[in-house]
Image (cartoon, rainbow, N blue to C red; front, side, top):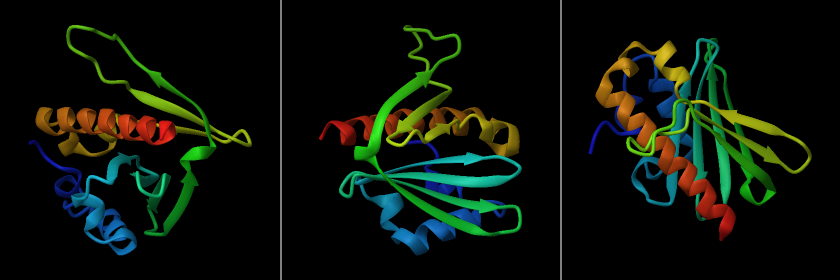
Length: 150
């Protein structure tokens, strides 16, 4: 199955992000098919993007360098468009997108780029973790799309 988001967030530098997710949603956020999670790690902050299919929401949990936690919940019905960005796309290899851009009503633009984690977290360079992260990104995008269509 690979290395799950829950397992990836158990390292000492990421356990605060995992704790915030569990406090907010309980362990169900990592166990239930109703949720799809994706982490994006940068030197400035750690973010966990969570699609809740039942509530039709996209929640962004962020932990900054000073350990401040913020939570923002956006309604998926407010999505106007989603655009996937690929680099060197290959139909043979089924290349995953590098990032997505989501535009909400009111003009808010949200970019989600999980490959930034490869630059920030050394263990994300492990091919198994990298592959699993890309698969999780594709599942995350699929969850967003299917929830928008409902």
